[in-house]
Length: 128
Image (cartoon, rainbow, N blue to C red; front, side, top):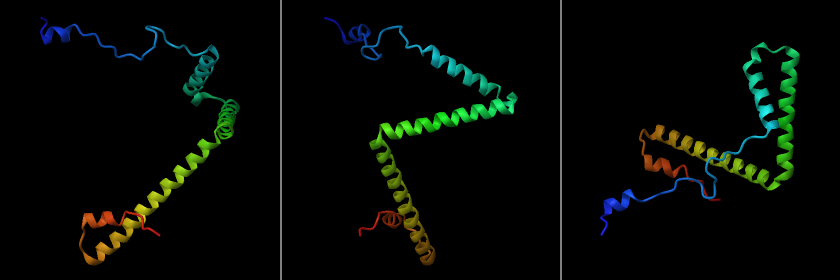
């Protein structure tokens, strides 16, 4: 009969990703590598760039950023709407917290007493 310590020592466990091949890494394409190298060189030499080169680089980056925003908006209108809704909800929560704490701070200053449990009640949104 095998005792439990021997069974634990002989146990093989896998920590990798299921289906992943051992020793294989996905290499970036040569085009991606060229772009990455060029940007890295520009980043290193940015203090020594001529004005024309710097302006051309800035224009290129701004164009790429605008293109990405346009493509993202075209391809995922649902994602854009969800992001706007979440942003609006976050602003509403922040507004509720700030107003509630402000009201409670004024009330506590007038009464000269502070109760944390009562302060929390001011953070909950009022039902209309």
